Image 1 (cartoon, helix red, strand yellow):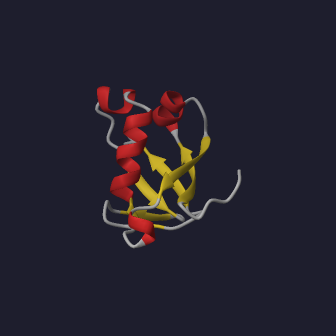
Image 2: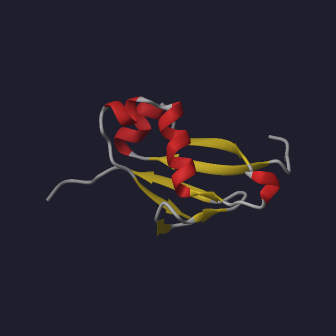
Length: 94
């Protein structure tokens, strides 16, 4: 994948039901930088894009937590080039 300064590149890993929906354990996703890089890309932006690419996530009302570089993140967390993202579905068990 060629580097493009107008895009942010993210490595995204999915687990459990999300992996089943996405059909892969890992994808590389490139998102356009906003306003010439003056405005950051956030977890909320990523969440919207994932749901756009994989509508079954919304249709099945799957809530996913997001970890960035092995730390839990909220929707306002800023993403950087080559961050490692984990999409985590709800976990149940005993």
